[in-house]
Picture 1 (cartoon, each protein chain N blue to C red):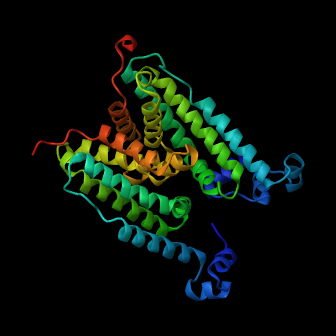
Picture 2 (picture 1 turned 60 degrees about the vertical axis):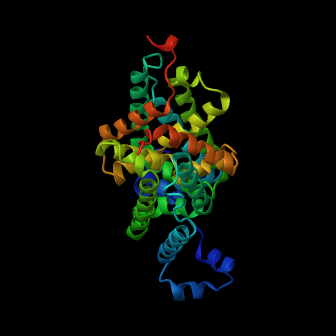
Picture 3 (picture 1 turned 135 degrees about the vertical axis):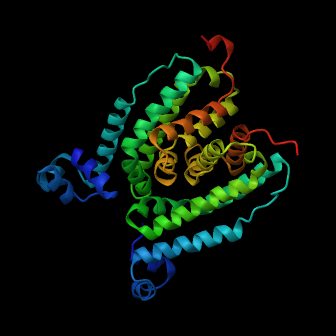
Amino acid sequence: MPTAARIAERAGYSVRSIFERFPDLSKLRVAAADYQLAQAAALAPPRHVDGDRPTRIRSHVETRAGTCERGVALWRVLIFSADQDPELKSRLATARQRTIERIEVMYRPELSTLPERERRNLLIALEAITDIESWARMRELYGLSFDESCAVWMRAIDRLLPPTPAT
Amino acid sequence: MEAYLALLRECQDIPTAAQIAARAGISTRLIFERFVDLQSLSLATADYAFAMAKSQAIVHDAEGERPARIRSHVETRAETCEGWLPLWRVLVANQARLPQLRTRLGIFRQAVMQRIELMYAPELGTLPALDRRDLLIALEALIDFESWARMREGHGLSREDACQVWIRMIDRLLPPTPQEARP
């Protein structure tokens, strides 16, 4: 986590001006999380919600990939700090909830064929597969390109989803 | 190193030399007689923790039928996640501050991959190289530490229920087991 001095230097402000706006660094972190959540929502609206299965999978994955590319650094801070900061924990929960809601929207036809427990289990698995750290690993550790990483997710999601109902 | 690990579990942050010394009942000077700096101690502790986790994650049923292999793998992995999540979070959060930690994380992940490759060798053996790589990546993501934490902390699943999620999803992701591998 950056210090107030580093943040001030990067922003071109004085440390004093940071603490005129935020009581402490914890509040600044929460504000940064809110900003990033808002940005993610604005930049990643659901697309092709009514498309065929391959189109929906591709659309979901590419949107999610874009969010992950932008959000890794802050996400790691949230994960690390959430236990000590209830406000950050709440932001983390919000981010996760939005991820799951997006999955529910994009794969509604397939999810609707499942009993409640199976549906829950599948949502959990899809969230895990498309986690930000999962993306970071593909890009940083395995050196996959953006498109290659998307392809990994698309194949895994297609394998996990039940058949699309005919209607 | 035991003191370091205990402090990590409690405080979720890299402890200071003074904190470690106090917990271990030794002087700060003694720490720096053994380790050049706190960074060296941090890395040594990460290596120690990894060795401990690895020794605890004994391989079972590697030659068994598919359901037995999946269950064995999942239960062993669950045990690791339950025990080492706090340390894992600290390592991930500090990898930018200590670049050598990133190397360690890569080694730890490689061990997870190797276990997956071992337990599902029959199924993975049926796949072309690219598909195999992609499936390994997906399986690793599914059984990541944070995936376990989400099920236990976020969704409130019991340990058995969380294992069941992984068991069912791994079974869905894996291709069919080849005939010659079936008992």
